Structures are given as C-alpha cells and as structure tokens.
Length: 116
Image (cartoon, rainbow, N blue to C red):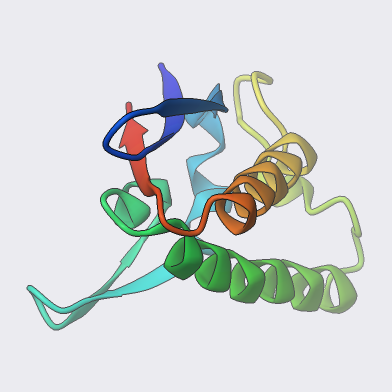
C-alpha cells in the first residue's frame, strides 16, 4: 500500500508520484490545522483537497521541521523514521515530500489529491 499523489484542475490531472506508506512515521512531521475539527492533523492525507499554493507553504514548513530534526539527531539519516520492514526510508520519503512541494509550487491553483 502507498500514497498516490495527484494535482487536478477542471481539465487536467497531473501524476506527482507515489511512495510507500510504510514510512508513515516520517509523514507525521507534516502538521495541518483542520478547521472542521479544530485539531491538527498529520500526514499526507491531511493535505487532500487543498490548493497547491497552500500545500507548498505547509511542506516548506515541514522541510524546516525535518532540518531541525536532522540538526538535533546524532544520526543525520533519521533512521528512526525508516520502515521497520525495510520498504521505505526517511530519505526517500523526504525526497518525495520535496517533489510534491515543487509540483505544488509549479501548479498553485490545482487541487491536491491523496489516495492510499
């Protein structure tokens, strides 16, 4: 099982990519305030339905959070976020997050879809 990410406008779908959901611990770094529940949600699913420009801002903050973790950890690889079964690493998840951020910056008006 994995995360499949798309951007959509009224006329066009853009396949951003997919990544294993085995790195779910890494995705908890992403925090999104949900106005419907007055709570913070975490993970890629929290970005579903948001506009690219808003997702890009959230992911910029998430990149900053990961950088803080990297500076505070003795193990710069952040292996505690790696998948226990060996299918997925924090590094691959981080690179996927950056890919999503770039796609959202390039398509700020499109809506992000997250399918698991």
